[in-house]
Amino acid sequence: MLPIRTILYPTDFSDTASSAFELACALARDYSATLIAVHVIPPPHVFAGDGMGIAAPVEDPEEAAGRLATLGTSGHGGRFEYRLLDGDPTEQILKVAGDTSADVIVMGTHGTGGLMRLLMGSIAESVMRKAPCPVLTVRGQFHRPLGPAAARVAQQAASV
Image (tube, rainbow, N blue to C red; front, side, top):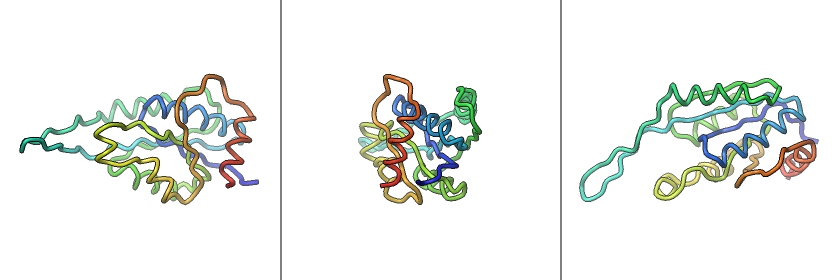
């Protein structure tokens, strides 16, 4: 059986990411693992249309840090750390996964949609292709609390 000591949870604070957080917390509880949340603030993008550039809104780092810190008080009951980083989300997530020797990454499959997804690609897909450990992706929301059975399913998926 694959030991799970460190779980990396990348978040963009979307509803899908919140569902992934529920699974990450269940795994952290069941395996007494450290849960590390990471949020990456990407560089500002400029979208050009008709020769005029429009800057995408820039995220407030203080607000993001507050949201990350709040995750630690969510009651998952184990060791919790968080990282707030700037840069390319895929690169930063992979760097943290390597630096922390993450045993598994648990993340939502989509938070960015529409034009941003078309221009940036799917971060989850890119992480899955390049990650040094198993990646569990979550799509949609859970309608019930997760317990040990969810951990067994996640464990089996991670060992594939």
